[in-house]
Image 1: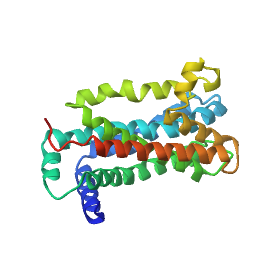
Image 2: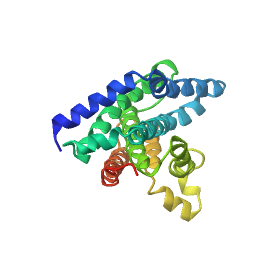
Image 3: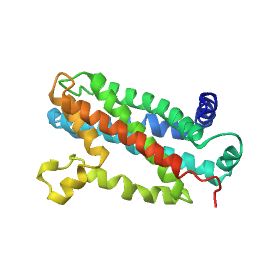
Length: 245
């Protein structure tokens, strides 16, 4: 890998995204608007919002970054841009690293905006530091970016990318503990939830909600989510093809 080539790739992706205001709105505004909507859904019971709002701070970034990253990468593939780039002296690691840096920068902005709005405007009450919430939200956004890069290798159209959401995102959403405690699930489902990274994102948010300091469980959850993102990025580099067909 070359640092200069990786940074050049990241700058190119950011310039392209800057010319697409709808994508920027999807990334930055939609999670915030959904949190605002949820806050007023639970207007009569703020404690309920505290519980589910903290969890969704870890879920919304993953979902939006997955969708935007996978579609943006697929466009590069279908327009032939990816093939031309790989014909140049640009390694797969440079390309994947550049995309990860570009979308990671957006993930920082997205996670910071959503966390700030939830804590300081919507009065999300947590025992721990908002910085710990931001840490998990950011790691989850990076995981969504990695999953999007990986899945784009197996889709031929944007419609197929959307079809991957029920297969990749929805099972994690159902089993992460948002709807029911994971230890009350059937043993097979609990075992499956234990290997899904979104479960650890939700657990990490719950730790911040309940404890004033970073606990050992919080550190474990953050490490698992971060390691999962790195693993999926490596898989994305391994499945990156030089030809689109």
